[in-house]
Image 1: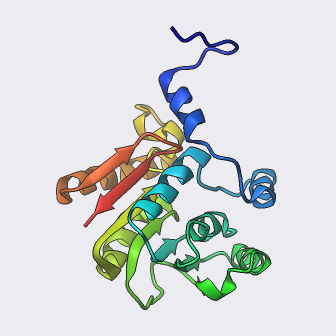
Image 2: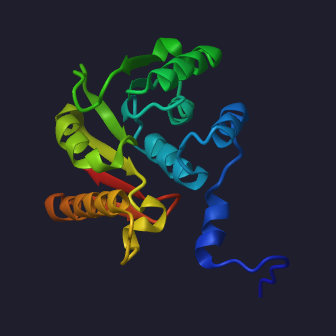
Length: 210
């Protein structure tokens, strides 16, 4: 028999705590929290990094750099990884560049400043990580899927929209439209790809193997 003291937790919270690892970029994590920069949840990040390790990923395309937090974590899995990452916001783009330089990975990063819906990206990738404007998930998927190497995979973050995805009544028009777009995307992937996995970790992860 196992006896747990302290706060009572459910099964999801129990697994979440087991999935969370020590933060290797505490300054970036703290900056993101203090400045309300959206970053991937710690338990979901652990899943992403394990997929990178298991699949021996060497090249990653990231849609949505923000301040470089997730990019740095993905690069930390192996010194052999090369990252191409796209960011629209100029301030975030500059901060991410500073962070890549601070942690001395700039030689492994191709950083593109522009709209991911419009920019041209060269190369082929073992993995694509989509973590930008959620209403454009389908556009990003269709635009960048042809850049995957054989056996490659795509990970999409925030497919649960912090619980919004299962709310029946949403008064805010913009939130309601966003929920509808992401819900359509989630079901589109289920209906059009044979190998998909939906994970209830963080804010929801979708893994597509093509």
